[in-house]
Image (spheres, one colour):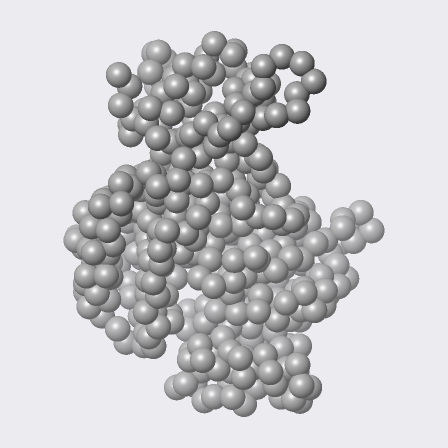
Length: 409
């Protein structure tokens, strides 16, 4: 029988701090101590102690007292303090590599993306260049007074919890121990599938102040996220948490078979969704490029323009991609009973018109269509959402273990 570890005072305080930080992040407006006590169920005395600790460590700040109260003293709202805590997101993808630094208040501190064709690139070369890119970033953050809560690396492939990349077919990489690279070791970075991290970027207030405006999803909503580029990835979010599966590899929707007699996929199987709805497939089918140039991201505006102007080949290519994606998504909806679908990446650039077409095609293919109101939304983070999600996940370490980062005296 496994031994049950007792909970000490620090465990309880760590938990309560995490609850307070998460509650602040989910709120669209700053909250007073009294409002936090009501939202969290913690006593006002406990909130006072926790608030003081967070203030001393520059995690939160006090705003000017609220005016207009009918009686009593004006309440003092609390908000995340900018300029002190950040998460670092890094990404290597099929169109290049780069980074994004996210402040805990939800603002992007800085970012950079190196556009590059990534055919036959060596991991040592690219991760070495990423290392060289990140070194001055770390120096600048330190000079500005930031503490890096955590860092994550997004990759287009299957990654284990031990930072081993099993395979990234569209990069030609496999069986790669990421821990041996300096940028991973120095930043204590964790690697994750890019679609998983991109999905986290869609969750309001996951680990930074929510800045989502009128985004219809709430923090604890469930949804399917689909990342569309050369490869097609996915993630299943259930009540605000990623569902990873038994081995951490859930979400590979790009390799759902939509045509048993279809084109040969890079995974070695025929008729995968990727062979109809991936970037390469769309560019070739629309006549904009041959296989050798189909990964070029500069062709995206040309595809959008051709589609919007009714070019026959572009319209047919996009239509076939929409149907294939609808077939795959309807199967997912039938299996897990979920109604929210978020589209990111290349297909997201087609906007709401694409979303409406896709919604209708998915809805017509689900068994419980009379009782399920399927919603298809375009991600508000179109440009490299995995970078944003990676930075959010870096900040999540502060949310999960606040005392690890704080001076308590």
